[in-house]
Image (cartoon, rainbow, N blue to C red; front, side, top):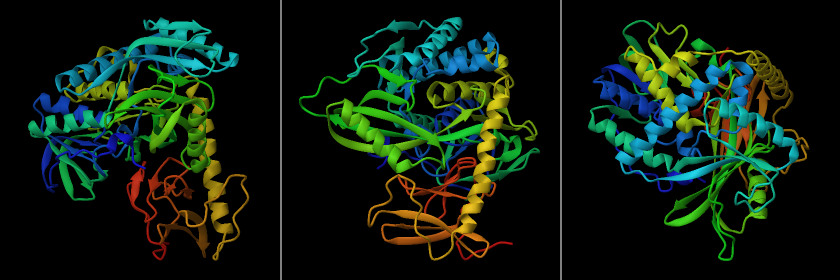
Length: 511
């Protein structure tokens, strides 16, 4: 199913791509970061173009829970493990400014949003220590959080404790993207869909290559989730993850919906909020995140559904979808000039699932930098690529990457055509007629074979980013790379991630 926010998919007017144009700034990525950056720069009188590889809302912004909250799980205590108090304070100031800007923008453009209390809670006593640490780190930054003992916060199951922060917001993220696109085009900004950035020079003027043609620019902003140019090595400092969401209507005799925005710190995490779809109240349930290319996606989605039905009086699951997020190894997003970009390529990534306030904060920083200034809190944050505890996190993540690279190739070269019997993993496989995929090899060439809706596709099983062996995502019918999170359709078209090139057909082997 598609994201609830894209049902129905809004009619957002964009522009036909025209190659050869020159702009002051080209922004790659039409999510919240990219569109707000483009708007701020266009307000300053710059000529701006936006590139979107698929369609408006296709990325993380169109698949988020859209909680605009400063209560962000255990984020602040994680920042304090790496950095002094002034960095955590600057992070909060940036998020506050991003939250305020977005609320004002929604008010000005008549985009509906709701004010809610946010809660971070623990099911058991083991999580209370983490709650207390987050409360201390939050108060240190000036956030007015409350620690609740044995609280009743409106959930239908017992909890051991919770933090609360009043006056946070929730909204429909695609409505915001639609308003931004209208605003941008009214200002003369070009918005190009189905135009994937594939490369850029670093000397002035930049020559930017896309799947539709070439553009010229003085500056380039990469707002693509994970940076699609490898010059900064960000793929080695970001952990890509997928998590699952579903929307439910309530049974007639069900208890009232919980009215806050909720996140558990227990594993597996659970995220809850209300929304309205087609005039009906629905409950959004999210969680069961895992590294891209790892885990058992179908079982993760089904287990989340079982949990939701066990605890709430639900009538119908109307939508089910997933989102991809990137965790910075030091808990602070990477925002600023990209190394080896000649000072003309700018990047924003690593929001760790808190992209609503962080996206706008990043846009404020990027636009200020391009225009020759800086925000006070942005100057403190700088372009921090490592912290005290982050080095260990980086090493841990890249150990996983190295292991996945070796074992992926070993397994790919072990399995031959015709396919061997599937290995018993203890998890349910596809039922008869369900989509399925497997990696086999022909000579020394790993091949990704999938059958979806009766159509069999055979493409290279080698990720076009850095050569990882792809794994089949049985929930989303995609080929996912466990190394750095690139994803492809069964036919081999890039969906997202650092990869910019499609998979080759299986009969196209390169030396």
